[in-house]
Image (tube, rainbow, N blue to C red; front, top):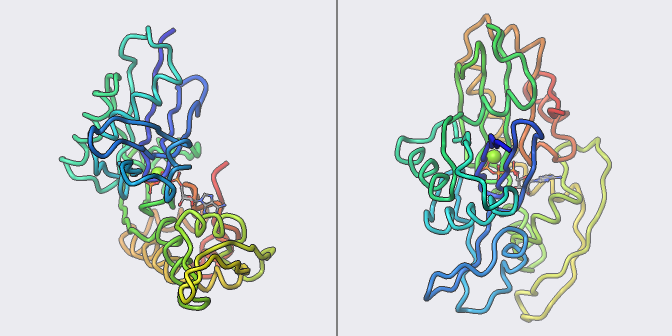
Length: 305
Ligand SMILES: Nc1ncnc2c1ncn2[C@@H]1O[C@H](COP(=O)(O)OP(=O)(O)OP(=O)(O)O)[C@@H](O)[C@H]1O
Ligand SMILES: [Mg+2]
């Protein structure tokens, strides 16, 4: 069987799609390795479980930061293991398209390509992430019609206008999912005197996080370390508190979208007011985000299906 894969090495998750079947694999972009020998012990979900829980001789890292490779050896070793789980070992160097951030430099692009080739594929196409998002959302990309995609990932948020098969204008910011987690951790430290891990902060965001007050709200109880006693302490945090904690990140996302709108040629801007913003990336799952963007930017928005 001939495989034609698409590889998206994201800051939080590595996604592999097949041209026939769509998404065939997704796992956390995390590697656990022996510090001294560099030997890989676990990747993906197994490695993520070790975050904050590994002994001192094991390092647990994310080899991709803000969409670009920060540890080449770890990234290619991890990708090789992921590919081995989705395609039979006997398959000879399948063709692959790789997704790169909109503003990747030539060096960053080369590193992503080489990591993919080192993991056993033949890279035959490189696509910038806004184009890839627009295609997977099945937007009308071949026509001279403007569409805006807003990809909120873990390390980067990119807003872009695409038309006639290409990116017309784009802007990226590091205000994305990981920044929200850091804001939640800081909020809890400041208001409750309790330190939580980033993994717990992410759990809080995904379960009760919200971008708009008129969305179903809730509470979650988590365990952290009391900074005055050093002992474990339970705290309960609400959707309203999470919204308050992540509001700087939400504002920065709005500013990024506005900056792209300012660069958008007037004809395409008219298309956007009809078509709105297509949200993608894991951050688009944040409850109330469409409503928040509609109120702050004035364009309808919806998550790509
Ligand atoms: N329900 C949810 N609410 C809020 N955020 C969510 C939710 N589900 C997932 N996320 C966040 O989405 C992010 C991961 O999304 P995604 O897989 O698109 O990122 P990535 O492609 O790995 O990163 P990047 O594109 O920045 O390199 C994480 O920060 C995660 O916490
Ligand atoms: Mg991404």
